[in-house]
Length: 242
Ligand SMILES: Nc1ncnc2c1ncn2[C@@H]1O[C@H](COP(=O)(O)OP(=O)(O)O)[C@@H](O)[C@H]1O
Ligand SMILES: [Mg+2]
Image (cartoon, rainbow, N blue to C red; front, side):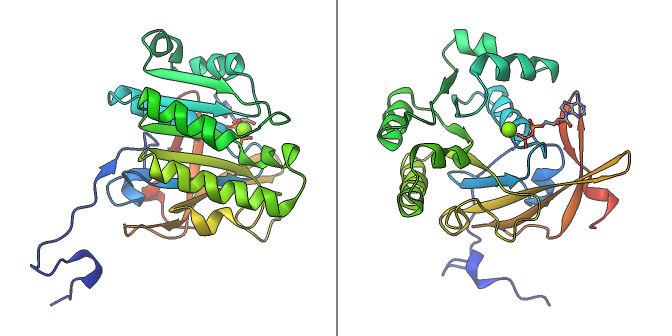
């Protein structure tokens, strides 16, 4: 007989159920054994063009389909560009914007100020349950002291957890990076880390996704092929671990 992991079994022997949400990324919920634990703060990291922004948009689109209130904070592209790009994937955020279910705000990376307080208020007042921030790498534009950046990112993660929303924060890392995050602190404080890889070989592009960490759940390990199309991102779980 296979012994059950003690971690998931309470004193009464009843399995503790982790509440999960569907990510909307085809195949990923299977890798996460049923979805992302609700209330997690997850770092989505990878080089440029690996699909981070698309991943974040797709996650919020699923939230809207599931009746959640969603917030997109962008420090890179303009809200207009993001909304127009999403339409190409069949995701019409503008209709949800009008009904107040979706909000997209541009935070100027040179004028961040007390970004944490602003965000906390916004989430509390509007009761957003899914939040994405694209990207935290831009924090370095406002704060040039690595200690201050780390402190801000640490606090940001804590604030998102306190707000009880499920959040994705993206970070761009150099292609050959040895660390999972930009400032070397994010991966320790977040609940999960999802890494997107891109390999260009001649005319071919090979994209992969790996879940490097996800608290409160078991998950499949290794890199899985990631496909990008006009329908967004799809993870090919069944084609095997690379
Ligand atoms: N319809 C599509 N079909 C295939 N690939 C696409 C499509 N739309 C965008 N892409 C790919 O996605 C990339 C951009 O993804 P994006 O999410 O902006 O990446 P990141 O935020 O990591 O820089 C483009 O460089 C392109 O290779
Ligand atoms: Mg991007």
